[in-house]
Length: 253
Length: 156
Image (cartoon, rainbow over all chains, first blue to last red; front, side, top):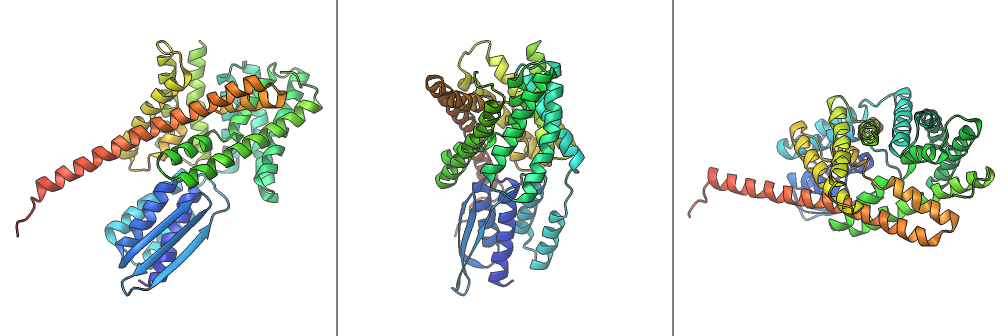
């Protein structure tokens, strides 16, 4: 296989892995393993959460570099599973480029849950965590309803393509405003529990934990980026909440 | 009663997130039970320990072992079971409290809540790292021993 083609394919796999939610270390490891399976002298891979840079030196001593910029993630652990299996298979069987490309396109067309199911999942999560954080059954019902609405708002805002910060402000404002509205009407009593159940869907708790995990395992750059991202998102959520609290005169805690 | 409700909702919440992360079939149930396990361990250690982050660390260790085992059984990356299993432990609630204090201008309590959030995140990350590092070492040792036994080093 041509080195250029090999590099492109390895990067395709790495990029997909990073988008699907792989750790930085796993991406670097997989890309390097794939490259060294074929005829290359040396492969250097550098990954942070938003970019992958790979330089290979092939058997003839020619050096090639390619980079990928990752702008958006969509955690898809089923995809990650398939990609991981593919990269293992490549290292074991050394298939040709056509076979790899075929498998990759198969992974691309893999199944995802339909929107109604995702909507139900949002409702389930919001309701569950409202109960988890001490809400009543009625609170949970209100939270589930708001969670389902939140899914639509997330989808819509995703379509418009506004930046992450603004999207989080809007979503958190919507959730908080609806929660205050519900409790004012008498549908649920604890606005706090309803909001926290829904905010679990937005808040970057996983991002925060992964950031520290990256830092401890030595990917300090990636960890710091992820940490900053989580803090910025948390501030955006706080801003949305505070606008709603101001409007509804619930400033006191 | 509250504990029972929390266990059930931890299970449901983790399973809900697994759906969002596109986990499929039996893996959904395994991921959900991971969530219930992590919260169960957290509650269990509540009987002897008072420190939240320390309990989170122990729960993270248990759930990582659980995820590592089932990842090998199901031949899938550990992340598939680790991330959903961590959901009840992640400091979402603490992060929410932190920002609420910041909005209210209650800086004293903001400091306490912020440091608690960071400590929980640190404890969880440390728990994961400890188990996955030990696991990696064990696997390396097993592989080394196996290679030595099957193919003894040839003398030139």
